[in-house]
Amino acid sequence: MNEYTFDEIAIGLAESFTVTVTAEMMDRFRDDTGDINPLHNDEAFALERGYAGRVTYGMLTASFLSTLAGVYLPGKWCLIQRVETDFPKPVYPGDTLTVTGTVKEKDETFRNITIAVRIRNQAGDTVMRGKMRLGVLK
Image 1 (tube, rainbow, N blue to C red):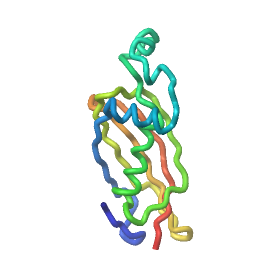
Image 2 (image 1 turned 30 degrees about the horizontal axis):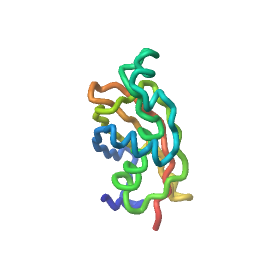
Image 3 (image 1 turned 180 degrees about the horizontal axis):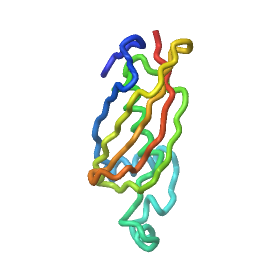
Image 4 (image 1 turned 90 degrees about the vertical axis):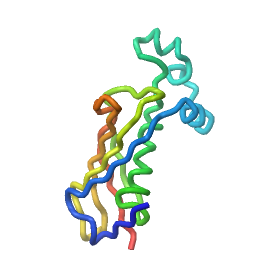
């Protein structure tokens, strides 16, 4: 776990990690949230609608932003204040995702940072993009 302090954070600082989405993650997400939408749970349903298989929950994909902020950038001293996301392409179980955050703004008065976030799949396609505002605790 990183422990960037507010003073150590500079515009342009970036961190990333990779994670592979599994069917077990999908099942746990369904069980935890109660989202039984067939697009995420029924292979035949998803295929009939033109997808390559079950589509990973968008919020499961977005949940990796919590890891990005709480473990990597800034890490230990993080408090998520705002998250904005877009999902231009679907994610499927088995996809390996690279989650990246880059510091774009730093607010000295409120001790927060804004990071641009991007998640790409193994083919390099952007599957999620957005930004986060993160408080950096003392």
